[in-house]
Amino acid sequence: MGIALASAGTTPRTAISVLPSSPLATSKSNQSVNAGVSTTIQHTKNQQSYNATENMVIAFKAADSLLMQALNNLNVGKTKEALTQLNSAKIQIEQYQLAALDSMSNPVLQISREHLLAAQQALKMGNTDQAILELNMLRQIRILHQQGMMVMKLPMAGEMNSTFNSLESHLLAADENINGYNIKGAISELNLANNQLYAHQLAMLDIVYSFLNSTRTHLKQSITDINSGDIQGAVSQLKMVNQLLRGNEQGMLMIIGKIQPPSNLL
Image (cartoon, rainbow, N blue to C red; front, side, top):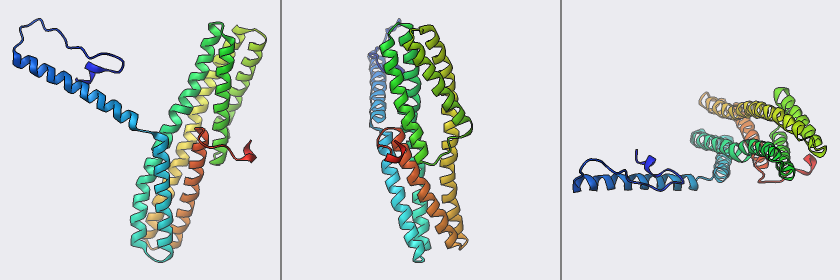
């Protein structure tokens, strides 16, 4: 494939043939290489142009506007217009939710694991200052994560809560071992913390997925209610969608560090 000829971080190279090549064959080969390089460059540009956080905010604003328009139309009996707006809002909400998961995945979930692994590696290299720095960065991300979940009113209960508390316990124990110059003990605690971090993030995603699914379910039910003539039921469902969507957006922005938590959460 053409893309393999110009993978990231490498210089495209043309293979040397052991068979005689005609000018036509050479021309076609060069065209193939150029096409591969062009495809790779375009793919890279497309990746760089995708900003998950920006897409999340844009889609949220569009969905929120469409929901409010639909509610206003329902209140004045314009059900046909409301249905059109709700179908458009459904697409925007789907785009928003996927962008929100993208925004949270790399700068929150992945980076948390990277900081923990970096702290372990620093300790193995004898660099305790770097290990402490990595753990402090991880702690800041965890605080934003927890506060964001609170804003979204997602329950810190069950496995998500138990793994969070266990993770915190092992990280504190690692800090104590570092301060006591017990590097072997600190590394052991970070290994245990790593296991809890994996379990905690998966438990958190289970709850977030349920939350996102609930938003879409209420929206679909509002469309069903309109089609069946239950306008009051549709209005009730849409108010729930709006409440869930706004809470989710604020919580997601807090988790990824784009807004400050409310004073009552500090």
